[in-house]
Length: 345
Image (tube, rainbow, N blue to C red; front, side, top):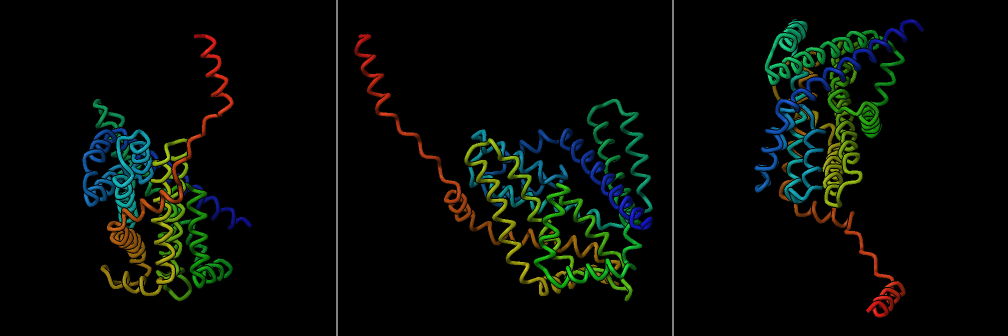
C-alpha cells in the first residue's frame, strides 16, 4: 500500500511540476513574442503552404498549439481571417506542437538544475521586461524537465510489477483501447505535451526481458489518442464565437480524427517505418526519440494528405454547421405595426 502511494504521489507530483513548468514557459513566451506571432499569422495566410508554416512556427515558438489555435479562432471570429485561410494554420499548429516531444526526447538530466538556476538568476536580476520574461521561460523549461525526471523515477518500480506490466500488455495488444486511454488522459490533463511526456517516460522503462515495457507498437495508439484529445481546447475556445470560428474548431477535430482512424489500422507498418529512422540502438535507450519522431511523422503525413483538400474540409464543416436560418417576421406583428404607423400618420 505504501509503495502504491509513493508511486502515485511521485507521478502526480512530477506531472504537477511538469504542467507548471510548461505553463510558465508558454505564458512567458507568449507575452514576449505573442504580438509578433499574431503579425506572422495575419501576414502569412494568403497561401495555404505559408499558412501551415506560420502555424508551425508560431506553435514552436510559443510552445503551445492551444495558443495558436485560440488566436486563429479569434481572428476568424473577428472577421480578420477567412475559414480557408485558418484551416492550414491549424494543420501547422499540429506540426509545431511536435517540437515539444522532440525536445523532451533529449537526455538533459545533467543540465536540468543549470536551466533552473540560470532562469531564476535572469528573471531576478534582469531590468528589461523582455529579458525578464525570457528568464522566466528558461526557469519554466528547467522545471519541465524536473517534472519529467520525477515521473521517470516514480515509474521505475512499475516496470517490475507483474500486475501493471500485464495491464500494459493488454492495452498494447488492443490499439483501439490505447487510443481511448490516450484520449482520456489528454482530456483530463488538458495538455498533449504532458501526456506525451508520460508516454515517453513509460516507454523508456525496461520490462523483465530488458525491452521497453510498452514498445513502439504499443505507444503509437496512445499517441493517436493524445492527438485526438487535444482537440477539446479548440472546441472550448469556439464556444460563443462566430459560426466560422466553430467550423475552425470542427476542422481540427476532423483532421485529428481522420488521422487516428487511418493510422490505428496501420500501427504495425507505421511502427516499422519509424523504427527504421535514426537513431539506432537499444529500444529502451531510443524509444523516447522514436515516439517523438512518430508524433512528427503522423502530423506531417496528415497535413500532406489534407492540405490539397482544404476546399473539401471547408465544405464538410459548412455542411456540418450550416448557417442559421433567419427568423421570419411575424406577419401579425408586422400588420399591427403597420396599422399603428397609419394611425400616427
